[in-house]
Amino acid sequence: MFRVMVDHVGTSLQIRSVALVRRLDLDLNRIVLAWVGLASFFCGLRAAFPASQVQAAGIDLHALAPYVFVIGAPVAALLFTAALFPSGALHSQPQIRLARYGRWRTLDCVSARTLPFYGATGIMASLLLGMLINVPVRTGEFLVAVPALGADAPSWFRVLFYAMMADVTVMSSLYAVAFVMALRNVPSFPRFLVMVWMFDLLAQVSIAQAATHLVDLPADIAAPLQSLLVGNLKKVGISLVLWLPYLLLSDRVNLTYRRRVRA
Image (cartoon, rainbow, N blue to C red; front, side, top):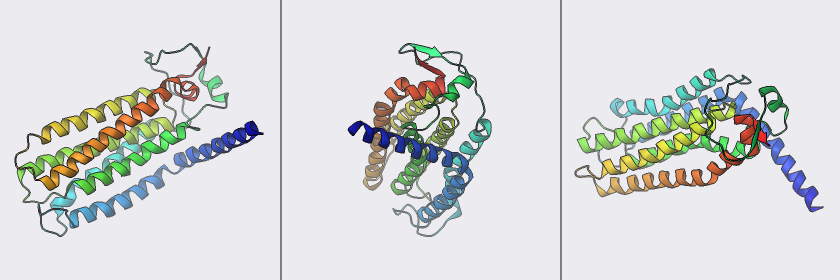
C-alpha cells in the first residue's frame, strides 16, 4: 500500500514537472514581458526614493540610466540564447568529457529521447525554476542594499555602485543563459552552470576585497553590502553542495545532457 502511494506521488510530481517545463518553454516571451514590467516599476522606485542621502529624493535621469542595463541585460541574454538553441533542436556533444565518474553506455540522440526520464523534468524542474527565480531575487537584493546613483554622488559610492551593478547585471544574464540551456537540453549546460557558480563566487570575493579599500565608506552602506555579499556566497555554496552531485550522478541529467545510461 505504501509503495503504491509513493508511486502515485512520484507520478503526480512528474506530470506536474512536465507541465511546468512545457509552460516555461512556451511562455518565454510572457516571462520577459512580466520581468520588464515588474523590474521597471521597482527600479523606478529605487531611483525615486534612495535609501541614503547620497542624492535628493526625486527621479533623476542620471539615476535611472544604469537600471536600463539591470533590466535589459538578462532579457537580451535569455532571448539570444533561446534563438541560439531552438526548442526541439538536436545538439552535438562536447568533444571532451568532464564528468567521468561511473560506468556509462552512450546512446544516439534518437534512442535517448525515447526513454521516459529524458528531459528537464522531475527534480531538474526545481533547478530550472531556481535559476529563473534567481534573476529577480538578485535584482531585488541589489535594489534594497544599494541606493540609487545621483549626479553628485561621491567617488567611493560611484565605484561601489558600478561594481554591484556589474555584478547583478552579469550574473543575472549568466543565470538566464543557463536557464535556457537547461530548458532546451543543451549538452554543455552542466559544465556551464558550474562555471557560472565559480564566477559568482569569485565576483563576490572580489567585490568584498575592493570594498575594504574604499575610503570613507559609511557604516549604513557597508553593513547591507556585507550582508548582500555574504548572502550571495552562502546561496552559491548551498547550490554547489545540493546540485553538483545531482548534475554528476543523476540518470536524468546524464541521459538528457550527456546521452548516456548506466552500463
